[in-house]
Length: 382
Ligand code: FAD
Image (spheres, helix red, strand yellow):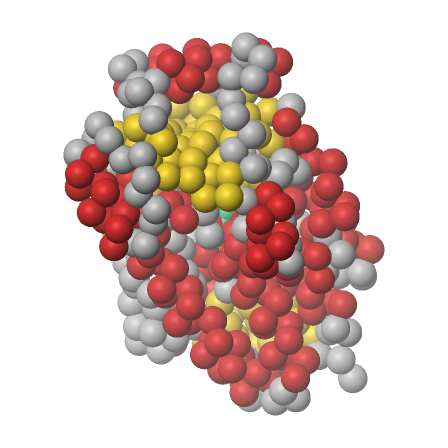
């Protein structure tokens, strides 16, 4: 008889895991606290490591028309715009890694995964927040906020940075983990390409870096929209939310002495969201018996390497492969953790390093860190 797997959270990691497991014959139920899967979030960068998984799960073909394939990643000086370095993407990624590099709206990816899960008989229950779990040798019992209960063989906590599954798991193991405010806040939004002068934005992953701030922008949805993220250092902040409205006028003011392209994009923005960037140290374990964590629930990371979604997608594939390979679930979950924890911990660390690189006060400081990071430094100047 196939094992029953419950997944907390229908985000990118939860839905990817559900699909990967369903394709390998597991009986999967996903519990999502939101009452509907609606358009939240903005752009995600999907590097070839993530794209290889989406290709294997037959998702990329569904998303082709909604994606944008950047030619290169370019880091520029915040005022005169001279490039510090560039990294080829597009065809180079295909030749080197056998998969492309995409920019995609989070909502488009989530919707495609949701549809594919439904097509593969995954049971998705909305308005179903998981509060906690208990387990015996045979099964895991879920307690839901809507008073329902559910029994399964394996529980995967893919319920994001505020994971309730993580809270129970750590309490059971007498461990703790605290989120630390990094002193940085990110503003994000999208603008319609037609609201900007033609060809203003190059078809790249564009990054401008300056003292205490940086600005990223790139095309989404076949080039119809431009996603932007503006990061500033700030000492005070309390909330950790993806949907808090920001004040566009305040944002424009923060970047008023930046490159004209940055200013034109912000001038066209009608609204924006703001969220504080929190960081956590890697956990020592992700597994409690027949329960395991995945994605932001176990390795939230700063967005400065664009690997948050990619790591959740990789987790999903490895989890399904391990559960398929080892008939004993606890052994499979341990192998999953051992395969994933060192890699994600390294990427959490590297993302922190990039935070320092992006906000170095002088280009000489940035050059030094760039050399350490193995980046090409041709074209460096103030
Ligand atoms: P998440 O994407 O956070 O998904 C977790 C899911 O679990 C959510 O659907 C949440 O509603 C659900 N959930 C939480 N608690 C419970 C519970 N107790 N029971 C049941 N369900 C629960 N990254 C970007 O780079 N750009 C963006 O614009 C962006 N926007 C985002 C918008 C939102 C609303 C969220 C939640 C995340 C966003 N992210 C964004 C983060 C990015 O999607 C994640 O870092 C990455 O995809 C890892 O995904 P995850 O599945 O681990 O977690």
